[in-house]
Length: 330
Ligand code: ACO
Image (tube, rainbow, N blue to C red; front, side, top):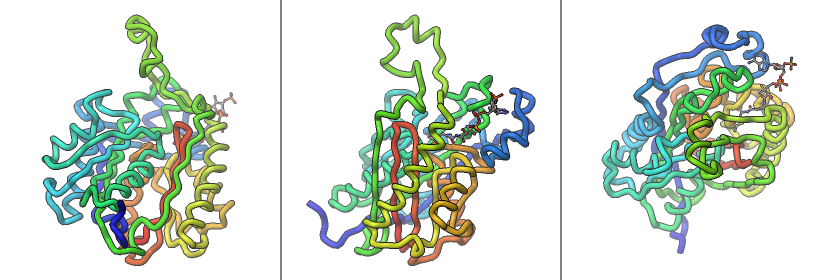
């Protein structure tokens, strides 16, 4: 059953980043790297690092609290919480349940969703279905990551790339033609080995093996780069076709913030002017599932989003997964 004429709208946005800033200069003291290499290859200048007592649920709860407030509703109004994360506080309970408790969303169902850096798009599209069907009136969708805990700080090829943060949106019902007007989700499990967190799950055969290994992000950077530029182009074409829009119609693009070179390559290939693209990877690095809502919130606060704007969000990540959504801002 779907409620005729109902579309899921973004009613409130929030974000949170930890206070501690780790600059490229700081990294020079930790591994054999330098600001010039990191800046020219990635565009990243600094990233945020969670405090010792902060986990993903703490960051996610802060972002969620702001999104709920900005939506003008109470925590009790939320019917559903979906948290996209690759760094849950623990396997169980879900980070969504922990956030439900922290925020007092006592009427909400809650679950986590794993789709790597595409997690936020997947979660938003999943929540959209609950709204459109009338199963949920308000849904809180959060991307929250503490990637600093799964980065090998001795591996210069990965540790310079990632950061911690959280972003959130509240979805609710709105009239047809506003809100999420099209989406496209995709996966390519055959490429799963390109980006993994080995030794982190039931693939470990014994407690001894678990104790001997530490789970760190493992990535084949060049292959991921090629994958990213391929699927960003493909995802954009597919979602615009579904929305019945041309790329010229799009007012703002919010891509996953992994690497400025990927974003620039995409903009050039798609002939999308730079002014239409939101990029804040320089300040936060790659915050995985948090990156798109973090960038959305920043764009909103900077006044770059206006009613009636068609906003294209596009992500890619571990899985491999990718996904896109077009949101007509109400
Ligand atoms: N500082 C200095 N030198 C470094 C560093 C560093 N931090 N890291 C690697 N190098 C060296 C390498 O050792 C290598 O040296 P060598 O030629 O003597 O062997 C040289 O730099 C080139 O290394 P590459 O890995 O080939 O560098 P590349 O140009 O491919 O850049 C990068 C690496 C930035 C990771 C790139 O491949 C990339 O952007 N990939 C996309 C991956 C990405 O963005 N992933 C994010 C996760 S995807 C997601 O969001 C889910």
